[in-house]
Length: 298
Image 1 (tube, helix red, strand yellow):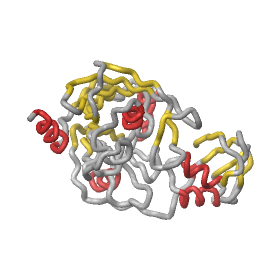
Image 2 (cartoon, helix red, strand yellow):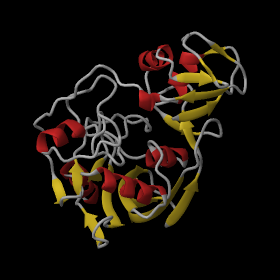
Image 3 (tube, rainbow, N blue to C red):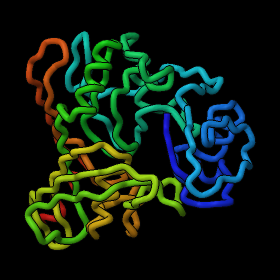
Image 4 (cartoon, rainbow, N blue to C red):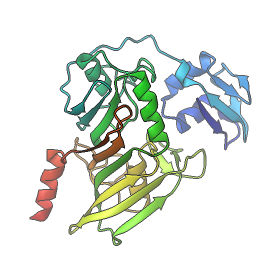
């Protein structure tokens, strides 16, 4: 369930929601028509309903399921660790974590369904096993829950910041300081719904800790540790401070390859929710990322 406050007047409900939520306008209209959107505690089923300033909107997208049956798809998985309770996956660039926006076949979820029948279902039929996610073109470590009990425990660990994640990113430009903390709230971009931005309107707090690993002539290799987990957080924060992630098609202004942003989920540290053993996993940079760093050395 998501709550928003209208910061505009005389704007269509469907337009406002498609601008501020991670859903396209067609999907938003379906939610409204199915009675899953309320304004000031009144259910609204008219997509063209006009909002006023400071209207409170509640969207219950979790209760909506389109008539689509997901199918297992034979996509190779790079499994870093697996036991009867959870899995750690090294995700490739270009692979969405879960279905959506018209992509219902080539996702990590489809691959997981082909691999095992043991996946939690707390997240709904479109997100079996998915406790958290990383962007389609972000690579690296991702945790999967195989039972509902483990899913609940891991979700609580994420909520209370007991799971530590470290990312490695290559930034455009030479960052002058050895470290930095970016504390800037993130919300949906008003002009481009695919993007997030630093804003005070309908936003959530976001904190990223940055540490320089190496400087090149025109780039900087950094480590990023998240205190929060907002959509596109590292990408938005790096662009906000003027050092966008290299090859990022959405937040940099450079011509980019199909590999996407040079952002890698490198390390994950946590206490196993059942065995209580301390677990730490790392995975090397993907070949295109490492190859580019090697070129920068020349």
